[in-house]
Length: 104
Image (cartoon, rainbow, N blue to C red; front, top):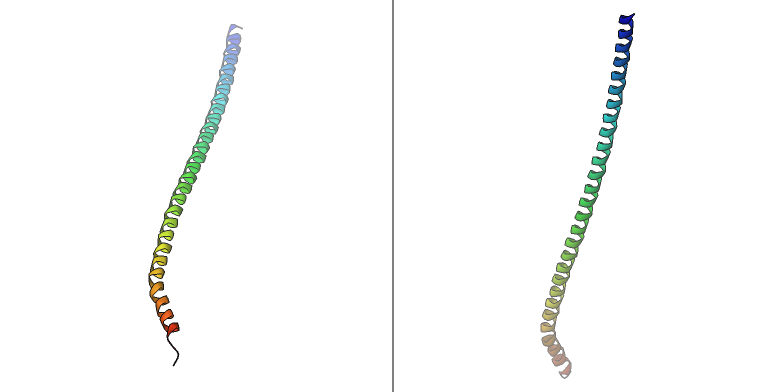
């Protein structure tokens, strides 16, 4: 009888150890899942911040390039005006000379 009692007690202990192991495995699995979710959320947040920083940098760079191009265009237009103005006075003088000539 004592032997049967010990066997049943040992079986109960074994069953309890198995249940504890299952519970521990389930807990570790859940912790792992939560950890992966947390890491994924952090990675997504870092990615979003990196994208926003890249967009902001690109916008700043684009605006700077726009200003440079505007300045170059303004200088180019001014140079063209100066060149045209330099040629305009002699051209007007020629036209006036031609107009003021008596007709033959």
